[in-house]
Length: 347
Image (cartoon, rainbow, N blue to C red):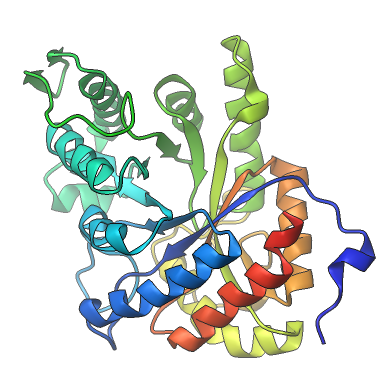
């Protein structure tokens, strides 16, 4: 039986909730998966979720997860939902920023001004595959962010170390000045970019809560140092989420799917503890880590984890990764329904 959270005196800060969906499955065609998600997004809208997110990945093997073209996937959803649409994240150094400026403007137009561009760097192996020198990743990120902002503001010319552009971008984005940009990353320069050139900081699926706290603190400090008001700061995180009526049921049914995602990041050396030490992908990662990286349990358990993230790191937006691997859509819908009925009302 679900606990009546109201009677327990739950009191948490306001937060937004989005769905960070896996748009690639090895058991179902993308066309059919999008049909499934159309119904899921209807449920999410009813319960007050505010957004849907697609991540970028360029797999070499048949594995479920993110897609190579997140903007195209989001454009396919735009007419079927009123939720905001976001990339979580676009791997910015792999993109020609002029091309991205146009594609983002079109998606913003298609969605009526509902697009948010989340960006990150990506890993050196992927940059090598795309012919991008890894030692240029940082400077390309900086230039690309600046170029996007200038083009969306209507400027006619940009000249930098990597990119030179003449002429305005038409059509312009629907949102004045262009879509908000949320910048991800675990190093100091990442939050500096977010403070100088972005509109929020974005934590990835595999980031430990200690990393999220450190980056959120840095980000707010940088905004305050600039003389800005950090109280309305956007600090967003992706969190794996699997919810059932009881903790025991959630852990029993969710372990397979959650473990697949944890193992994916661990194999790349990206799943780390709060001190930056990689977890061994051969260990039972589901039992090794907990809500410092994933949310699995009853609605009451999930709500306690959300309160923890708000108290520790001041997270304002939770984008919940709820459709891991080839998970049956019924389990995904159950997570959204339980969150909608027993968690979101208290947020």
